[in-house]
Image 1 (spheres, one colour):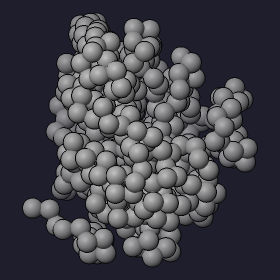
Image 2 (cartoon, rainbow, N blue to C red):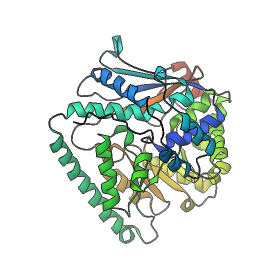
Image 3 (cartoon, helix red, strand yellow):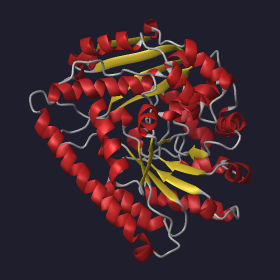
Length: 411
């Protein structure tokens, strides 16, 4: 397969990296942070065997800068501020802030990757690291059978596009003329098969189902294909506020307020599952419910989550038809269509589909993440609505977080 560098542009990352990056640069430029790579499933071979290649890719990544054309594009997004673009103009990743090594002892066979340093210098590593590990893994796993793997991927993609097209065309007849349309977007950069395949997927969906496919989180592909770049915030943004001197119980409210002050009406979809939906809704009062355009689901039962969101809007006397629910948790075609059928008569919905678009070619995808684990030398946590997604390397802090937000222990 292609031996060229995996990452060839610093624009090849998710939009929410730029939006969070700008916000944290303005709010907490002196933060220190630590991010760790985790593989949640069992790979076909030990990921530690990729370590040498990963380090070569990281060396290359740290030579890249933003071009004038890329910065002009970013600066043209109305929520990107001039001082942040100037910061990016001189930005380079620093190799000393990231380490990749084979695991030892209990981590034997694992690939250990740690980014640690000033948050505004290390937070950007995440998406690039995940794309690098994925592409190196599948280059090796599929060596010698790339044509057949890609042929299978194209066949599967054609079936998905046809199903989306047929379903969307039938919505007025099956759900009623007042039902909100079916719309989806690509969230597949972090776990894609390869950069070339990701580009082909996005180009194919734009060509085949433009009435359904509305954008991508990949900023480079959005620019290349004339699509809308999609994204607002991720877990690390709300987690950061757990470690910046705000009273812990008020950290979610402070994070939401910080977002409102930074973007003043833009980027209005709030992520709900950093401490769980119930704890989020306890903080998402009338003020925030009016200011934010909607909510994003990323763990737990999506129907139960959506019903809670609709009940919350109703209790606040807000017409849910003026808001939007975005689903993004491990979606495939069947699940996206099921959720649309359930909710589209009551609220606008959108579907961010990741691995099922960008890495469905036959070989089993990796389930990898790179998450914020410490900030300002304090632990932070993601207390998900799905137990398998909870992340924290300090059980004492996790227990305290549960107590403060009155989140029961799963089980």
